[in-house]
Amino acid sequence: RSLTARSTGPGERDLSLEMDGVLDRKTVLAEYEGVRLGDRRLDRRLERILPQLLVAPGDSFPEQMESEADQEALYRFLGNSRVTMDALLVGHRQQTLRRMEGQSLVRVIHDTTEFVFDGDREGLSIVQSDDQHRGFLAHFALAVSADEKRSPLGILGVRPFIKEHRQRGLTNSQKNLLKLHTPRDEKKSSRWEKLALDVVHDLPMGVEAIHL
Image (cartoon, rainbow, N blue to C red):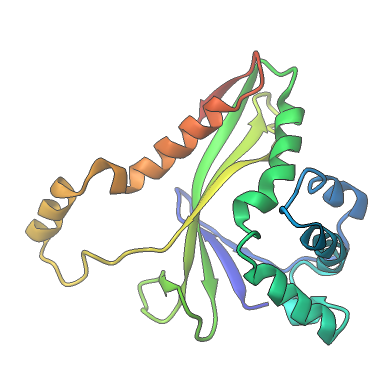
């Protein structure tokens, strides 16, 4: 339980991954039916990994796996170049689009979340002001129904990224100058724009989206 996810948007909040109970296995596995990793062995490994993860989603990988062999196989699976976030989300995204069919309007909520890890880890950056917590950020697009219930329909896209600290040690005038000369494609606002365009491109026929 060394991971905490924290929204960085308005009204930011901690989303500690402490989960009780067991998620409905059939429902969750259905979200991965469309995943094809280009190697049947990887597909079979995913089929074995998922049920073990569902038992206690808030636990660490070593705690979730049934044996040391499963744990080693999990790390090999995650280290395979074919196993990417986009590839793993294909099934869930397909199911999300299916749930949107027949609705004339949906809301798509955009939010950037910090994933903060304890301990020393490679490839991460400082994500909090105390300079002690490292992790990465991810920008999400969550589809919800447009009615008063605002029922979650699923994730339409996610873009992970490492936080850069190019403004550290700069004066206010230097920071303003850096912002002025930063290409539009590299600005934070471009993540929202790019993901919104991706979502619009794949909307089911007859469905419109309000991006928030």
